[in-house]
Amino acid sequence: MSQIAAHAPYGGVVPEIAARAHVEIVDGLIARAMANAGVKPAALDGIAAAAGPGLIGGVLVGLMSGKGMALATGKPFVAVNHLEAHALVARLAGRLAFPYLLLLASGGHTQILAVKGVGDYLRLGATMDDAIGEAFDKTAKLLGLPYPGGPAVEAAAKDGDPARFALPRPLIGRPNADFSLSGLKTATRLAAQAIAPLRARDVADLCASFQAAIVDVIEDRLRVGLRLFRERVGAAEGVVVAGGVAANGAIREAMARFCAQVGLPLVAPPPRLCTDNGAMIAWAGLERLRLGLTDDLAAPARPRWPLDPKAERALNNKA
Image (cartoon, rainbow, N blue to C red):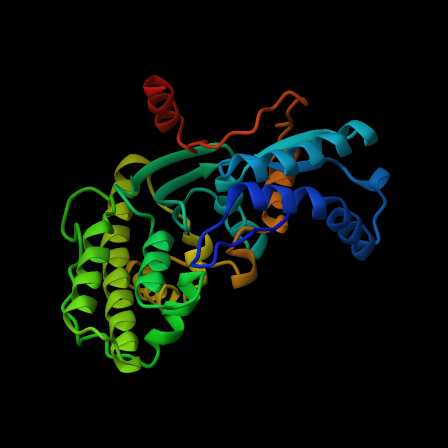
């Protein structure tokens, strides 16, 4: 899956421009990847491409390119759910058996899942509004920091005082494993407005306070998620954090503390495998190919594609 995006001046992605950029670049990108790997198409075992979820224009470009390669080479084709790729890439990064507890946190998704096997997922909790990465992006924009917001907020937070602003910790103590970030985002905005115009120190302290609140929420939600995991699935082999937000150092440290407390190993992919990348799509394709889980060339592009079958049925019932 190629990583090509056209960014708006103040953050975000312009879908049509991004899709056109995919069209212009994807063929050369595939050719370079094959050349760098020293592999001819005939030597491949199969072709995997992301089929969703995501902005449909970019997804279509990559998916059709993958289908074209599969048709030209006669190789098996695997249409990959890119959320499943995040869920499984920890098994590429380190030895990890099923089942395990997963925090999947990105710009568009925040979920706690039980990963029971390839294609077998149970959603234990999800965001009720903003995803964690989305909250980072919007907070960065509010404070005049560049896009993407996650790395910018993390960098500013290193010089800030996390105790200066008493920001809320939404849903802490609730018996479910869901998240809610809109209230935290609003509280950050109100705190910023109250002391405007902002100095560099104010921005750093706001970032540190915001990030500290996110860390506290994640630790609490994971504790509940692990309890639900043990009730519904059984013993976990480990805990995984994946998605773009998993590259955040403070969140990784919090996850490590949590895992030390509960006596489970933490598997966190290296930062280069946390954000959307082609290696995770290839790995998910390999995991599915090993089990004979291939797709025909009619596999559709899907802008929404829940991992949990129950969540998918609920989505279809609403459609």
